[in-house]
Every structure is written in C-alpha cells, then in structure tokens.
Length: 100
Length: 319
Ligand code: SF4
Ligand code: SF4
Figure (tube, chains in turn brown, red):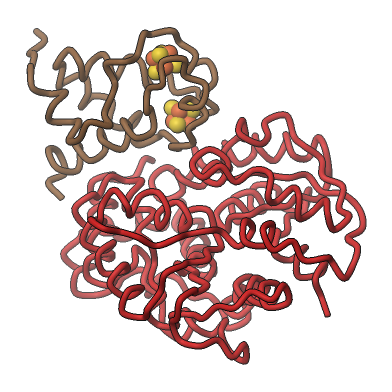
C-alpha cells in the first residue's frame, strides 16, 4: 500500500526555486539525457508532488546518478530547474535518510 | 558495486567542515604555483584557484588506489566510517602523488597568471587563504556545510581587500559567481573567469597556433555560466582550427566527472562515450576544466591526447 505524505514537496523544496510542479511530462528531458536515466526527472518529480515518499527513497541511486549537467534544463519547454531540483532531492536524502 | 552513498557524502562533508576542503592537501602544494610570479597578497583584484588544479594529482592518486582496490577510492574507507576520518585525514594515506606529479599541475595556474600578466592585467593572490570553493558539497546536497564554508571563503576575500575575483576553472567560477550570492547576504564581488577577462582585454597573440583540436565545452561553463564564445575567440584568434563535436557549445555533453566520487564506473562509461564523439572530429582535444581533462584523458588512454586551454594560450602569448 502506498502511504502518501502531503508535505513531501514542501520538505524537499526548501526554497521557492524548487519548481517540479511546472513539469508537464513531455519527456524531452528523458530523451536527451546522456545518462539515459529513465526515472529522472519526470517520474521522480511526480512522486514528490504526490507525496509518495517510499517511491522517492527507492530511487536513491537515480537521484545520485544525475550529472547535474543541465542538458535537460536548457531544453525543457516548461523551464523546470531540473538540476537544482535534483540537488534539493539530494539534500533531502542527506537530512532525512543519511542523517548528515 | 555502488558506493555507500550516505557514508561517502558524510566523509566529504566532514572534510569540508573540519579541514576546509573535501580532499585536504598540504599548504605547500596549494601555493607552490605562485613562486617567482611576484604576486602581491590580496588587493582589489586576485587570481583565485579554488585549489581545483592543485587537487588533481591527489585525485589521480586516489583513482590509482581505487583501481588497486577494484572500486572507488572512497570504498576503501567508507567501511571504517566517518568516525575515523574525523580524527585522521584518511585520504592523505591513500593518495601518494609523486613530487613530479604534484609539480606538473602547478603549470596550469602559472600559465594563467603569466598570460594575464602579458595582457597587462594587474592582480594579486591569496596564497594559503585561497580555499576550495565547496563545489562538490554543493553538488551532493551538503547544504549546511556549504553555507558555513562559503562564509569562510568570503571572509578571507574581504579581509584581503578583494573586490574582483578572476577564476580559472568552471566550478569555482560558478560557485563564486552564481551560488555564493544565494548563500551570503550582501555578497558583492565581481567574478570573471580568466577566459572572459582575456577576451575583454583582447591582447594580440605573439605566436600563431598551428593545427586543429576538438573543443570540449564544460557543462558548467557552457550551461551554468554562459562561457561559450570566449574560449573559441581566444583559440581561433591565435590561429588554432577548432573542430566542433556533435554535442557542443550549450548542447555539450558531460565528461562524466561529477559521478567519479559515487559511481566511478558510470563516470567512466560517460567519459568513453564523450571521447568517441570528440575523436570523430580530431585526435587532439582541448579542455577547460581539470575534471574534464582527467576523466577524458583516462578514458581515451593513448587513443587521443587532451590539453588544457591554458597550455595553448601560454604558447600564443609567449614572450
Ligand atoms: S522536459 Fe521539462 S516539462 Fe518535459 S518532462 Fe522534462 S522536466 Fe517535465
Ligand atoms: S542534468 Fe541529470 S537528468 Fe538532466 S540531462 Fe544531465 S544527467 Fe540527465
């Protein structure tokens, strides 16, 4: 059973630059990513928006496999700050999972 | 095997907090590049290295240790954990670059200083107060450690009367120009990469560069900092023929370097793909970031030769 955490997006996005909600799921980022990361960023951002914490945590390797190269950012038609959003997710892992 | 991500980030964050660098190196190695250049300490404008090139022989040493261990350099001690590293700088026990290796990398900041001096630009240096920018902590989401570290770097710059910073590599440029202003209230330093400074000053080259090279744009320069045209203008202005790979300029492909500390095999795979793109247009490559250089040269082995852009510019502006 999926447990939803309604405040997940607010917890991940510590400042207003986290704009995963702008994503319209067009798929350009996935198509262009040199790492061929299937879950990034579209699916992961959906999990965050929907409060699906367990799904986010299950994709730890995905979150840390992004190059932060911004090739997706500069081609995203919705202006999603993809790399910065990934950094926010990493910070969330550091705080909530690794307890750094 | 994937590295234990949390333990790895913990060690790097601890190093930044306790030792002011994710990978602490001896002061002698940090400042040796300044010898004989007569650079004043501090002043209105300084050349700031952020230690990126000085770190390279240590990173290479750790990568060699990693290959012997059959995994990433950090895997060897993430098992014993962060606690030991808090007392003992473990990375120093694992990386043993030779004197020649350490001195070889002094060449890059020296190249930059000499080219700027030839162009008539006046600047000082911060010597042992020239600190690592915290770029890796930023990428790994170690925000609290980075915020504290950024204040220390900024305080050192202010203490030395600095108003303008000339950077060398893209990561330090990005941190000091675009990230620090989001972390520090009232941050007011002007930051430019030396490539931008040289393009503005536009000195006439004294020597013509022969031949061609494939240009590898750094993601951080091209997409974070908008530095795309400056390296092209400088190299082509000195006579070098530049070959553009399929992914180039703002659409450049990453060298894989950002994954080296957590997923070295993924980093190597991306570097190999990028080398093939570059090799398709030339047997010689020009890089503008030390991490790009190391990753691409390692992947290319002897199939392609890379050179830092400052080596070309030093030749073009030689006395
Ligand atoms: S390119 Fe932008 S809008 Fe399209 S799926 Fe990716 S993040 Fe969403
Ligand atoms: S920033 Fe990450 S998700 Fe976007 S293209 Fe680069 S590696 Fe892929």
